[in-house]
Length: 213
Image (tube, rainbow, N blue to C red; front, side):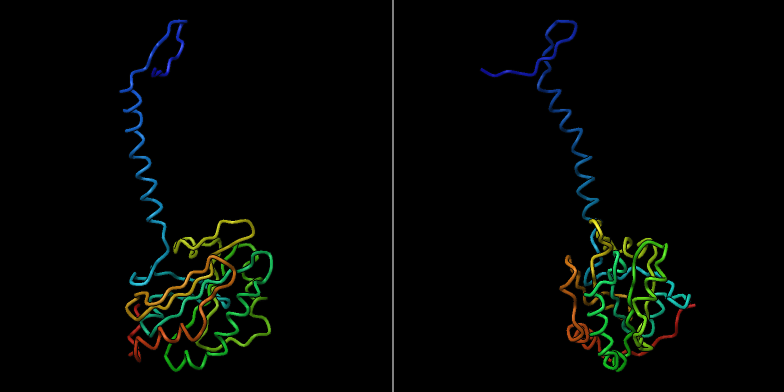
């Protein structure tokens, strides 16, 4: 025997027809569909995509614009973890390895941008502590990402307790196209210099263009 839902209204049994339940289910479909599309749209940039342009502020308060850098040559974009309550040892190790290969990046006419994300309050101080006592090559630039503006634009925000961003590495060519991408969903598992330089090497020797006004 099959039963259909019965609700008591003024002590008189009222049986809702199956059609009412069907229409209610159909009404929910657009909402579910929109949620699915929203999740698809929230993916980080990938190989083959044009990297969204962005302007940062460096530690010396100068402005750094991605499109102006790529007009001069390939760009290696490194998203660090910033300051999740401490200076990340994995970030320190990754940057140390990249800096030790600075001459190789310079030979390839490649700029390396290190993005340091975090809450705006105290971010510049923490970033200064991160590079304190370290030599920063002239083709390396540490930029700030206050309140995760860049991190969120690239959909790389790690919204876990005591987390900041997913450590990520991009190689971007002179047309602004991403040719290499590695996103880590752990603190480690970072892209190494050899793999990054191999991606840069495939681009060939760049011919600098005039910077855009």
